[in-house]
Every structure is written in C-alpha cells, then in structure tokens.
Length: 172
Image (cartoon, rainbow, N blue to C red; front, side, top):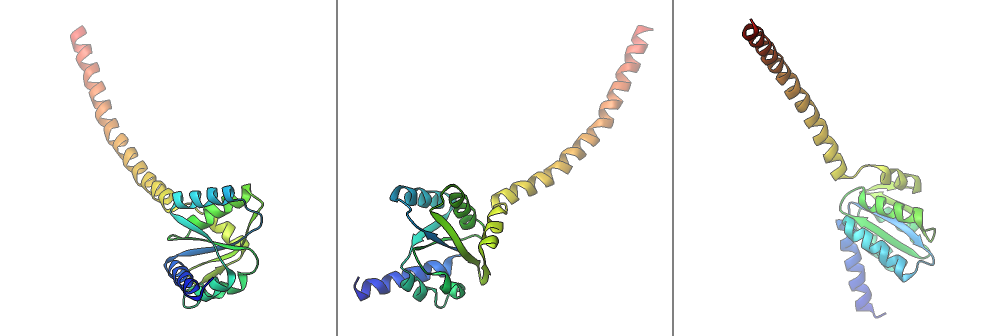
C-alpha cells in the first residue's frame, strides 16, 4: 500500500475515532464475508459502524483522540465498532458475538473511560436512549391517566345518584 493511501486511511480512522462516543475493539477470526456484511448491516441499521483495521494504522489514528489508551488492544485480527451514542455499538457487537463465536470482544472505551470485556457487556445490557425515553413518557403518562380517572369518578357517581333519584321520583 502506498504512503499517501496509508495517510488517508489514518486520517479517516482518526476522524471516525474522534467523532465516536463509544469504541469497541474486537477480534474477528474466521469471520466470513457474509457474516461480516451481516454485522455491518446490523450496525448501520442501529446507527453505528464497524471497520476492520490494520493495527499499525489504527494505532496511529488513535493518537490525539480520547481512545489513545486502547492502543495495546490492537493486536491480531482486529476490528472496531463505534457509535455516536454510548450504548449502540456495545449492544449490537455483544448480540452478534453471542450468536457467533468467531467475533470476540477484547475491550473498549466510552470517551476516556476504558472498559474491559465485562464493562462492554454491562454497557450492552443498558437500555437504549429510545427505550429510556419510552419508559419516561410511560411514567409521566401513567399518573396523568390515573388522575383523570379519579377526577371523573365523582362526577360519574354524582350522575348515577341523580339518575337513581329521578327514577325513584318517576316511579312514585
């Protein structure tokens, strides 16, 4: 590979790493093209990305990013998953690794906070931002619904009492 092409790859990787909120480092031994394409498709659908990297170029691209401390993880057949939120890359990578033994999580980082394999798996178990928003809206709506039911109950009871009284007078 010529020098100018390598420099361009390092720049692109550096931009990707700098823009990422979370970065997951994986080893992918024997991953077929179809499996790799499936993983990339899942990442893209979730709003994340997945790149197979040359270790030497990736280490150069890490310089000046919050992920500089991950350089020691770049050994062997390495690929990185990245996303613009904290949970997505970890969630998709962990789900894929669970179903496919050819992909193993080595570690990762969320900003400058380094994560080991257990940390990445814990991060993957967290609900996504959309799930949290849904739960929050549900919590906000539930009391409002209950309040509306409580406020309507006395009016309904009053109407039933008046109707019973009217029926009683009509019968007499």
